[in-house]
Structures are given as C-alpha cells and as structure tokens.
Length: 65
Image 1 (cartoon, rainbow, N blue to C red):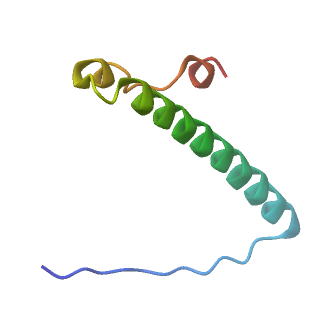
Image 2 (cartoon, helix red, strand yellow):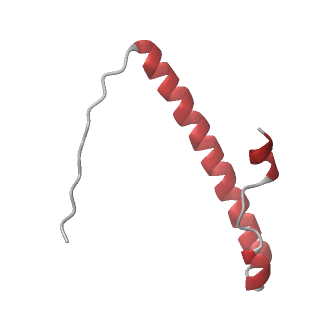
C-alpha cells in the first residue's frame, strides 16, 4: 500500500489571515478545554472502566454555544 500526500501553499489576504488566526485560536481553546476535561474524567474513573465509557460525549458547555 502506497501513501500519498499533497501540500498546498496558501497566500491569504490580510483579512483572511486574521480570520484564520481567530479560527485557529478558537479551535486550540476548545481542543485544550476538552483535553483537560478528558484527563480529569480519566483520573476520576481510571479504576472503573464502565463509568469511564459513559463519559465519552462532548461536555454541555460545548453543546450550548
């Protein structure tokens, strides 16, 4: 099986660059928030695998916004 990859270079305008920076900032915030919560849940339920399986969905704060 062969793996292929494509690289594309972007040349955004100043307005597009600002929008990309805001978007990546928001994505980074949400990712880090979810990662922090997943770590807390794992530490709380690491000995109980069934309880850990029940906590696999996004948090309420993520769904509300």
